[in-house]
Image 1 (cartoon, helix red, strand yellow):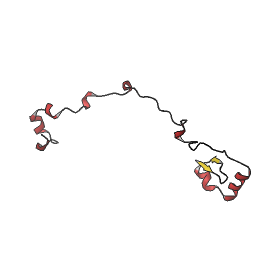
Image 2 (tube, rainbow, N blue to C red):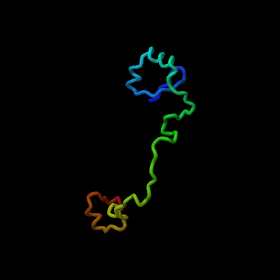
Image 3 (cartoon, rainbow, N blue to C red):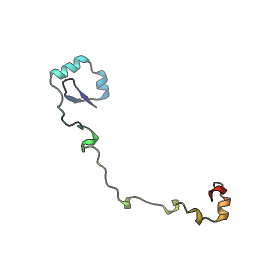
Length: 92
């Protein structure tokens, strides 16, 4: 995580380090001029363009199974509709 020191400089520390950080240690970091001056508000963010890269997906990478396509209700025989436990008369 990025933590901004009171002098405006930014350091990168873990949450555990942040929770253990004392006021004296913060003053030492300031005294040693530790950290970086950040001008870009998106520094270290996924929005800065240096984050994750997504590969383009072609239609050839996708697969379709014709059996999963639901048939139109008018294509199903009436007797089959009546025998179907999920079909109700109001569905017509």
